[in-house]
Length: 320
Image 1 (cartoon, rainbow, N blue to C red):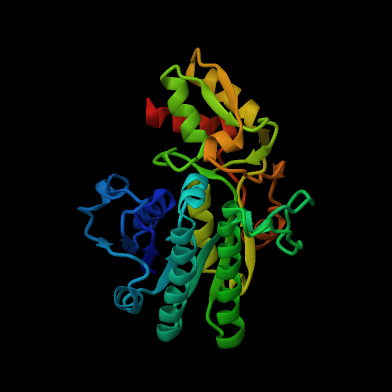
Image 2: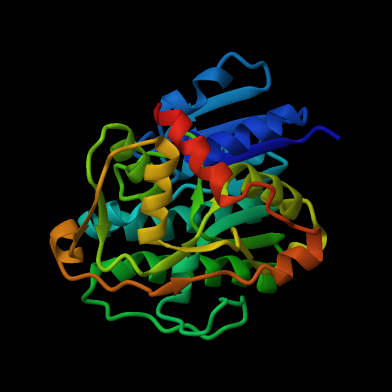
């Protein structure tokens, strides 16, 4: 049955892919975005679609959010500060956008009893040492005087608030912790590593690796992610639960740089710079970030369909 979905952050990288996916399934989509980090180019092909509407406003505008939630059947709350560089440069904006925006969305969803899926982040695991990260693990956060951790704390508050609305009021809320979602339309200007590497490799410039480059990450293609969250928001057993969502192929940032250079047929070299050089201040980082996907796999049979080579090829193709 066709539904009407509201996507906050709908002109962003993930939001635009989600909108496209939902439209392909015959649904109606309203995308709310103030274009602070989202881009109109991301949704340009959708603007003429009869089942798509774009609203340019902030998720912090209660009047707009209430109106749009009232007209929706489900709400995907993706609006957020994005990227390490933005978080370090603008911590006030980061905290306010995340916490206040989520509060407004949940208030409206409660008012009209609309199911909500909130995208959280692997950052909430903080300095967790147990790998792979499991949803029930304890977390260890860095000190509050490091702006880098404000994003993790804010996302944690989002999760607490969403789960509180579910427990206290029965609101259908699902939390998804995303691990390094990548693919076409993602830009590197806010610190995203793979688009930065792809763009530099195609220009023959050095690929700048922060720190030693031995830190490892797992990357997931955006199409796998949007397919999974579309299934989760509709699954009653997902309500009141937190799910990891990402890829399982672990790779060091040094090896990622080498694979991008090879895939691009580039003559670029790898240049290591300190975190302080990159961000202008000391920076805590995690040596490994690997998700356990057992929980989401058990509920919806989630299995990534794009491997890392597919992902690298897709990002390079965008910049080519």
